[in-house]
Length: 347
Image (cartoon, rainbow, N blue to C red; front, side, top):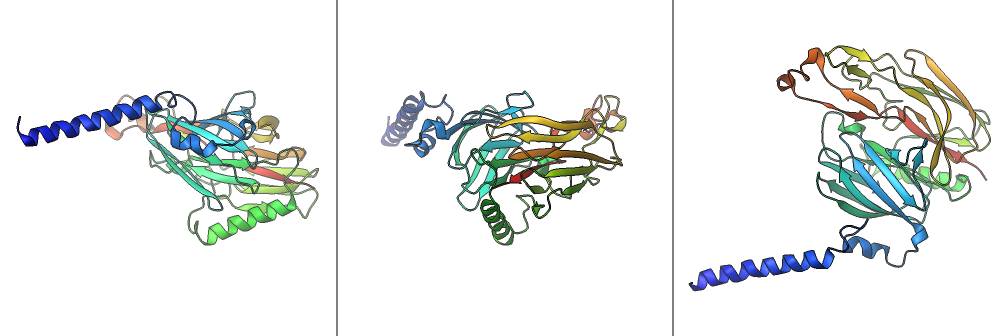
């Protein structure tokens, strides 16, 4: 063995030894939520009651989220949320992320504190720690990886919810101010956070949300963040036009390739409570080309409105993506677009 071969062998063995050391030293941690040492260090000194164990499963066009600890995810009796995270100021999300089907990404931009971006790869677990914004409000997170033509619909909201009261006028003002600064600087041209519309100057507001040919409300995903007063009687009217072409995920295809508007879904209003539980306020089967109206008294700290159950979409014109899938390929997945949140301001 010459000198060059000895150096190559020594270098190879050194790399193997270092790699083995890393595996052995981190093995007990890699199977715990937030198991990467660099992530664990961010939680040093944080009381356990301030830590929300959060698992995010990324689907083709959707985030499915389980929370436990300070918040226990429960959406209409199911132990998870769709495209939604609920937390309180001062808490930390101890996040693990996996992919259900495709390479994806989790991107959260709180420009007052921290920007998080994590690649989510099938077969691997990604970890991160996210401090919950101290200014209460609704903050967008999204899939920052192109994984199909509906990828821009993979957008969710992290709701920083007051511990036991309602959103204060002071916090709402700070939240709006921070969002407006972001719109004119760091987020200029990028609608990561939906527009905020206040109805706090009237006691019984009427909120109108109009869908378009893309299946979203008021041209934004999620729809506008609405702010109303605690105890007010809110009338919410939602209109969705009949979907009639492939720009709308509510325009689906049967197994035989025949297009049809999706009708087996519901639209409504749902209360978000302080412990994270989401309960039904009112819902109706969807009806197109007409206003569907809901009236409720704003007693919960926040609400979700619209179509909050994902719609299964399958692009299959003339069965060219079915029996003859090789002709035009496949495009299918669960999609949410016509939804948003309401924040309740109180004293």
